[in-house]
Amino acid sequence: MSTSVKKKRNRRSSRKYPALEPEYNLKTRQDLIEADYIEQLSDAEKDWLNRFNEEYVNANFGHKGTKLQRTKKYRKDSYDRKNSRNRDIYTRVKAQGMLSQLDENLTINIEDTIINKIDRERNGEE
Image (cartoon, rainbow, N blue to C red; front, side):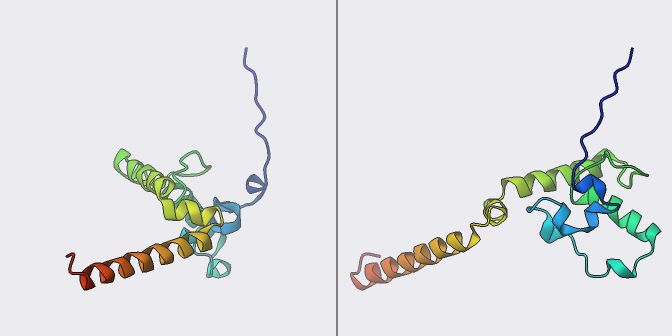
C-alpha cells in the first residue's frame, strides 16, 4: 500500500529555471548567481546552467534532469561550500540586512584600536 504525498507548491517551484534568478534563491546565495546574460542563452543552455547552479551553488542534487556532478568528491565540495557560507558571519549578517550596522561597529572598533595603540606608543608602553 503506497501513500502519495503531494509536494507543496511554492514560488520557486513555479519557475522554469529558478536557479538562474537570484530573487528565487536564498539571500546567502544571491550574490553567486550571475544573471546578466541569461536572455542570450537557448533553452538547452538555460537548462544546463540551471542544473549547474542547483548543484554547484545550492548543493541540491534532487533536481530534475541529468546530474552534472556525479562523483562523491564533487558533491562533497558543493556541500562544503554551502556549509562554509552558512557559517560565515559576514554572509549571515548581510542576508539579515544588518550589514550597515556591522560596518559601523567595525569602523568604530578599528578606530578605537588605532587610537589606543597610538596612545600606548606615546606613553612608551610598547
